[in-house]
Image 1 (cartoon, rainbow, N blue to C red):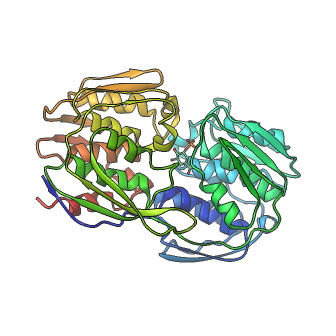
Image 2: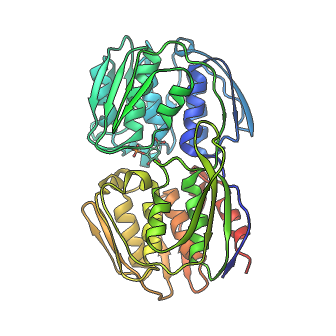
Image 3: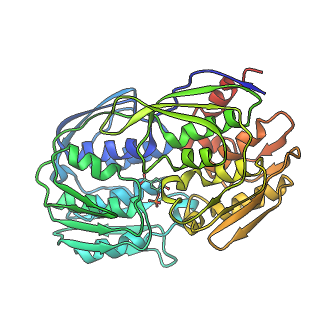
Length: 419
Ligand code: S3P
């Protein structure tokens, strides 16, 4: 297989959600360019619409007029978050500061995902949060006057951290969040850019009582989690190279590329000018011989969404790869430990589940069989890379679910394969 081309993958999903939410909370007209128009980001747009902030269609240049947190109005419909954990948890943080009830619902996958992790700190701040008995959706948040909080999060979760920071920002109280390891830091970067006082010390972040938030002007860089799939395709190819310009290279997001290099991959990150308050640059990936690696708890947060892809690459590497300290994978869009291992096995790969990760034995045997995605976009895309290999005969049960984060994924893969 020969690959080639320069591909600008779509805008970063985490930044796109945050750009919309902060535009809604700001006072004045925000301008967002190159937002990701994916299903998850549409969920955030429609939820903000239900809270009284009209969001225009998600084009390459969007203007949103916010009236501050007090400009948000009581929803007359349920807030349908679709498949999106980020929409639910971040907007729940905002809802905790609003003097009315907001009821969050979502699809079957989202309804099973844990919400107590945000309910607990938001309750401690003074909101009333009712979570479904099994810990998930529907969830109703009744907000009001909040108090300051210092919260120790059990997991390194940017969604938990951001829910608390947004509750603080929307209500004007100070919040401090301590994490066991550093999760992605986009929320704190945007808050600082909009004029809030944010102090970061190690794995702790403190937001001082925030006043009005200035409007946001952001050009959303390309998503490193989406670029990871094309990088993997290039690494597994026999000839050529793929260049991926304009990618967000925030160090809290680039763990996958560090892991790829440790596996022996020929991948380079070339920093350019910062954009949207984030470091941005070009990734170039080329065919490589891969060797197994061991990944542990410290490696996980900066590559949490890429671990299914790492497992798929490990199935083509020399040796046995072990991933540990990644129990968070069990509460993603699917149980990604169970899903990845079952699918690798279905393709003839030796792989085993661990309580907090998995091990995968690499080989060069052709991969044949059927992949069951459970509607999980990252499972479809990770196995889509293995399906693209010349000797593979892989059937994927649901290819449409890529619309959650990377709608033109299959087109971009087809474009990158020269022969
Ligand atoms: C996200 C945080 C991560 C990640 C998700 C997006 C975000 O979740 O898996 O895809 O935008 O804050 P956790 O914070 O729950 O780890």
